[in-house]
Length: 126
Image (cartoon, rainbow, N blue to C red; front, side, top):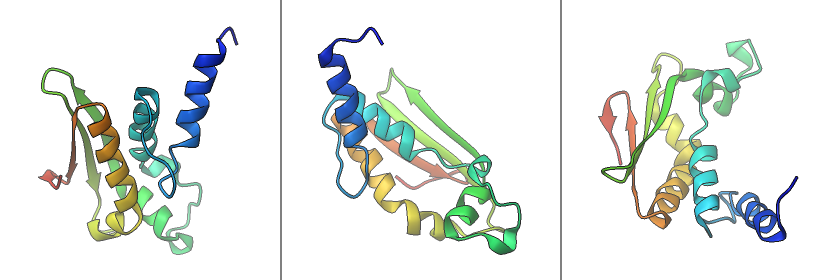
């Protein structure tokens, strides 16, 4: 791959530390991976096509009609902006499965000395 051992080690550490049960940001690379991975929610992630067969993860992902992760480098703020179709699932269902991921994102942003914001349906929640 053309990478030296230190670069490979950084990437392995980032991958190994992005699990929300056991991981935490340990480097800038791991913090960036956490922010990208934990913000990946959208209906195109759902493979099932039948709403009747959806579990809560499918329902939440399918309900997200727009997801944007934006960085304002001047203000040092990263914002996850979601649009959730409440006719498919309530916003509370999002937090039921994404609370740990949201908090991990907040701490990853803090590691990078930036502020993490979460906006759902035009309401700033964090």
